[in-house]
Length: 303
Image 1 (cartoon, rainbow, N blue to C red):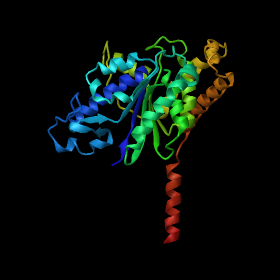
Image 2 (spheres, rainbow, N blue to C red):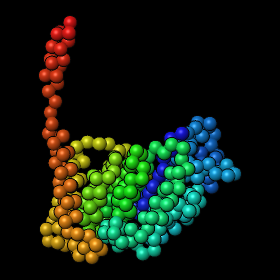
Image 3 (tube, rainbow, N blue to C red):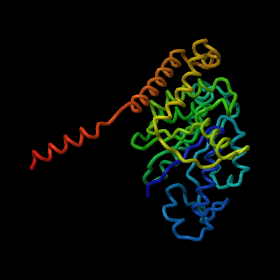
């Protein structure tokens, strides 16, 4: 059996992760106590991909939940499926990080990451054949510092590191340093993640309010597609980053936590390269007729 180790972090990542587990439990017929109450043998088929089977017939999600403050963990524990998780797999700090990516990567997160890796290592060692580790989180939240540590460790280089990353939008949040946090996170993702599923908060906002006419949208499952149009989201964040970085706005929040200004320059360059690569693929054309004629000539020569 090929198992998956699920990791979720930060307020957004844990809220999305909590909804994710509600859906998975419903699909497999698992109730909030971890007991199987389904009505089909198909629900138990391959259930070990996401669950560990414990004593008394309970199924426990193979999940690690982390944050730099306890509030999110308390919210999940008091939620509808809060008791289904293994208590030891809640890893959290006490101080938070105040929307500062550098605190998550250099100070507060650095102190927590060893505890997170211990739980990840324990779960991975209990797997027969670990397939991969999906990470749920929001790119402008401080958990990205922790996720960068997880990706840097690379204790499992032959296993896929897949992230589901929510990118910020000024329509949804008024945190002024979101462009910094998002760009610094992209800098880490480009270097370390094997695959990144991008969720654009602004696009989700527009879908909820303009298309679905939802005044108070809740968490749910959205279709994820890939096209070169995603560059518009990267371009938007990059322009916001450049406008702030040119004036060194709020830079002392980050340098005060041990960051070097050169890291901002490198992150900005990586983001611009990413936008340019998407633009290159968008502008690319395929000469289908030419390819067909070439293949036809090869066929005639072989004949």
